[in-house]
Image (tube, rainbow, N blue to C red; front, side, top):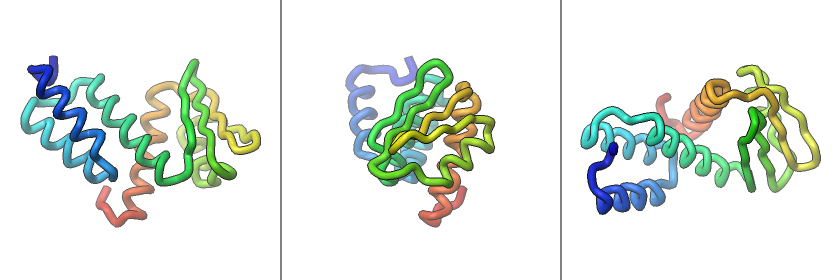
Length: 130
């Protein structure tokens, strides 16, 4: 396992759940890398999901799901045009229905590219160097 003891695993998940900004998640990732070594894919995925949740909370995304190469985002209002445009940049096929944004043809590498685009944009708005 990446983190050797159950007690440490629980403590690290508590630290992750306390992260409220993308920068805090990046700082935690750096500490994990220094303490436990390079991140394995499942751990990297956990960090991506938490970053996605932070962005969701900050941008009025009420729900998001990914299944069968289809990403479904539900918003409190209309989906932002910048998300639609950025999904197209990485090869997704966005469709809007009411307060939902469906993005078809999003395989995992495309989703990662899309999330990197979103994270970079969010960090620029926060003044965090990418």
